[in-house]
Image (cartoon, rainbow over all chains, first blue to last red; front, top):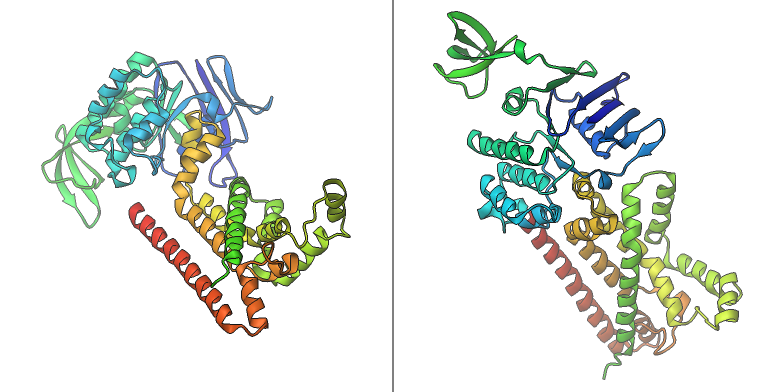
Length: 263
Length: 223
C-alpha cells in the first residue's frame, strides 16, 4: 500500500494545494488537469526532488517523508523511475549508454532486447541523444526509467511526442512490464484519452485538490464532424442524430469520426 | 643564444597553478553554483577581487601575510624552515590567488548551465554525488573546463606585478619570462627583450586561438 498526503503552495498561490492518494502495488494512477496547477511539482515532491509545506509518504511501511517527525528519505534511496517532461537524457552519452547508466543488474538481458525492439530504438543505440527527434528521446527516456526496475514509476507527460502507432507499442510494453513487476505507476498528462487506455483510476488536480474522475459519467462516444467554423474555432459534431458544438480540434477534417466525452 | 630558463620556470609555474586551481575550483564552483545566499555572494566577491585590484595591491598583501615578520611567515620559518617570500613556493601561492577568478568563474558558469533535471535523473537512479559529478556534470561542461584551464594557464604566463612583489627577480628561482623582459628593458637590452616578448606573444596567441577554435567546434557539435 502506498499512502501519499501532500500540501504545497503552487506558483506563489496563497492557498495550499492538496495531493492525497492511496493505492496498491501494481496500480496505475492517472493524473490530469490544466497546466500550471502543480501536477509536475507534486511528482517531484513524491520523488524527493522538491520540498512541500506539509506531507507524508509511506511506501509499503517505509516512511519516505514525514514533515511532522522531520523524516525525509533522499531521492537516491527511494528507487523511483522518473520520466521527465523534457526527457533529461544525458547529452554526453549515446542511447545505450543512457540506458545502461540506469539499468538495474536484475533487469535481464533478454528483457532489454525485447524492450529495445518494442520501443523501436535498436537503430538508434549508438546515436548521441542530441541527434534524436522528440519522439525518439521520449522513448529512450521511458526505456531508461523502466530498466531501473523502480519501486515506483512517475511519468510526466510521457506520450506527448509519440505518434499513435508508436504510442500503442510503448503502452503495450508498459502494460506487460506492469503485469510482470507490479510496479505502481503515476502518470501525469493533460490529455485524458491517453490515460483511458491504461487505467480507470484517473484523478484531476483542480481547485487545489485531487479529485477522482467519475469515468462512468464520461462515456466516450464516436461522433462525426459535420461542420467546421474556423473563425469561431468551433466544430459541429453529430451523435445519435443530435448535434453538439465543441471547440475545434487541431487537424480535424469534415466527415471524420472523433471521440468525444459526454458528461 | 636565448636563455630558456625563464620560460621553463614560467611553464612550470603556469602548469602547477592550473592543476592546483582546477582541483580547488571544481568542488568550490559546484558548491557556489548550487547555493545562493549572503555567504556565497561574499565568497564570489572575494574570489573576484583579483580581477579589479591592481596586482601590486594583491602582491603587497600577500607579501605582508607570508613575509618573515608575519604570523604565517614566522610559523613556517620556525617550525618547517620554509620561506615563502622570494621563493618559487611563494610565487606559486601568489599565482594561485591571482589567477583564481580565471578558473572559478568559467567553471561556475559551466555548472550553472547543467539542467537541474539531469542531476535529478541521476539522483533517482541512486547515483552518488561524486558519480553524478564525474559522469554527468563534468562531461557536459567541457567548454567551461577548457576555458578555465586555458585562461588560467595563459594568465599565469602573463603575470608580472604579483610575481615581482612576491618572487623578486632571482635567476633560476623566481625570474619568470615576464620579469626577464622587464629586466632586459631596464638594462636597455632591447634585442633580448624583443625575443622574449615575441615568443610570449606567439605562445599566448596560439593558446587563445586553440581555445576559441575548440569551443566553437564543440558548440557546433552540440547543435
